[in-house]
Image (tube, rainbow, N blue to C red; front, side, top):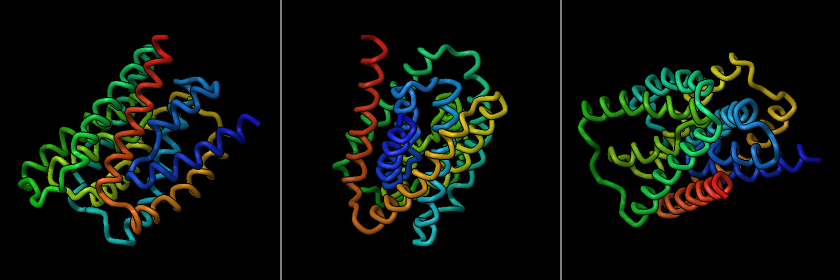
Length: 250
């Protein structure tokens, strides 16, 4: 029964996060933890796996709609792919309480940044190519490391980074979905190498995220406005961060 309820919740979350260009691990992981699964050995690696599956499913829709900047995102893909296993390795040396605190603080930063920018129009000019490449290389590695460490794909940081570089909101969300594929599975591989997995949970929830992500990606492509995407993104992040901090300190 617990597995069925968890799977249903994950399906709904995959629908929401695929619209934002995110894998959803930032909510998958707390959900698993709330339902009693161990944070380090089950919640984080399963969250990374589902993160990857969610964005693969959504990215297929975005790719067919020509919404993804594949060439422009290559530096971000490479650097985050390298950084994610480094972060996954570091989880062995950092206490669970510290990981949860870092997780919440990252979400507050990203959510606050997105909420402040939600009423601003998209930039009409991109940063210079050389500047973008440097920012993507350095930022991608750091975000990838954070993603592997905290068990998230990094989309909640990739999207704000790309918006700052001048990407339109929908293109940033779609491109983020593509980039997160690599950091998610790279980080997941690092955790599997450490022996962290729960196969029944992984299989059941993987099916759920495939269904939810496909529906969400189609809704975002056809119905969603840039302002709505930013506001949804911010509210979800801040809400989960507050919930984690309350549980941590009360």
